[in-house]
Image 1 (tube, rainbow, N blue to C red):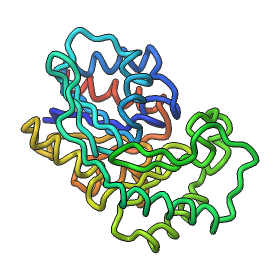
Image 2 (image 1 turned 60 degrees about the vertical axis):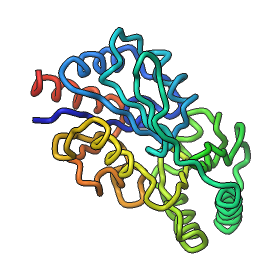
Image 3 (image 1 turned 90 degrees about the vertical axis):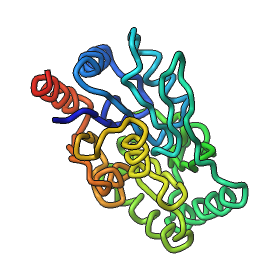
Image 4 (image 1 turned 180 degrees about the vertical axis):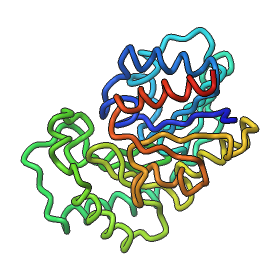
Amino acid sequence: MKKLVVFDLDGTLAESKSPVDAEMAGLLRDLLAVAKVAIISGGDWPQFEKQFLSNFPAEDLSGLSLLPTCGTKFFHFEAGWKPLYSEDLGADEKRRIIDALEDAFTRGGFHPEQVWGQVIEDRGSQITMSALGQQAPVAAKAKWDPDFTKRKLLKTFLDETIPDFSVRMGGATSIDVTRQGIDKGYGIRKLRDRLGIAIEEMIFVGDALFPGGNDYAAKEAGVDSIRVRDPEETKRIIETIIACLG
């Protein structure tokens, strides 16, 4: 019997940097009635608040766990959202990662005609590069690297220059860098320890469940995983899970 369903956010529960829609929010509320739910995303806590919590009014949130920045942070609801840990990078680590990202972008010859907002963002426990900027429109992001070719090249460069860090591709244009071993697999194990739920009793749902994708570490942790194309497919998966567990 599965007791915990873990989701990615961007590309799985919602379009990139967009809020979850009313249908998805309703399905997740229904799912919370039959299982615990967790969300692990490359986005930082403010993005969770804007993209998810602002559109998810629910009376009882005790069964919901939120893990920003690929599981390098963990928030649980106990009379309010409280951080349980944050695996923050040191100043020297951040500088090395940022320098490597800038160098990889230059080596790859990627010079977008337009960017929207910050390209490299310090999220405390994670450094994220969004090739077109953090505020780029969904349509522009969807066209930039639909087959991950550009980011696979960037990851190759980064694996050479900062091999002691974990480099993952996620979202539509992003690359997430954390300490080695501090990733979604780490978050899965923290969920196991915190909630007392065995990995065999979990399901993970995400759109980047391929080698190098930022969901792949969850699969490597041993969770039964379901790869989805988009939020619409996720909705059908949630309906099926509710029918099986209800």
